Image (cartoon, rainbow, N blue to C red; front, side, top):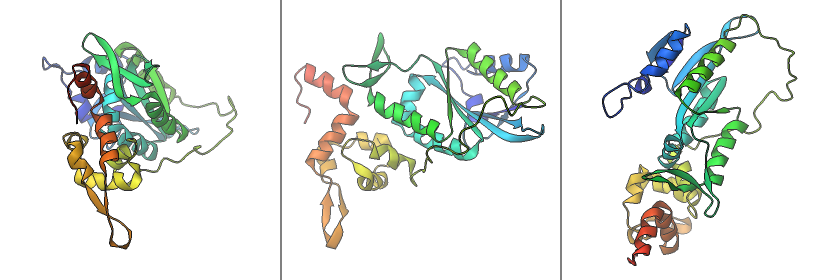
Length: 270
């Protein structure tokens, strides 16, 4: 039995068809039942057997289309919330990327995303995206890539069958380490971690910005001039302002695509 998160199970396309119906059919055709449930994190989970054949291990899998859903989940902060929670929740946390490999524009260093007529640059550098994924792996997470729905079903079925073997050979490969290389400790607000990764912001200002801008869209709508006047209390009663230079960097980071278009036609952007 595989538990599939209810929100993911009820996703519809533009015509009102359930997106994951075909995936469920492929899994159930393999003799595995699929049940809608509410999961705290991950899109699906199931239990696996230990060396004694008891169902004690938890396996959680987060499914993301690549590059579209992967990049959007970086932009809105979902990924920085989901991955550390999976490391805490499951014995075998897995991120499954469905579709294309991550592609990079080596002139700009940015990850490409789908756009009308092809691909263009996202707002995120390859180093930023790769560092996030590497941190998940270092914490004990697994990342798999599959090209399409059929291969996704094959991966889920194979993984499920592996974890439901009546016995596991424990001496197949030597295990050199018993604990993660790194511990992924979340900030109290995952959005603050996202803001902290914007150039020149830093952790203190990131925490302050989460209070003023509870989602990225709010921050994007703030003009650079107004953002520069944002303040926080400093030492000895001083008032520290965000400042024009920092505000300009944030504005450019969040509006890079629009700024490039404006500059191309000679529009003054500040």
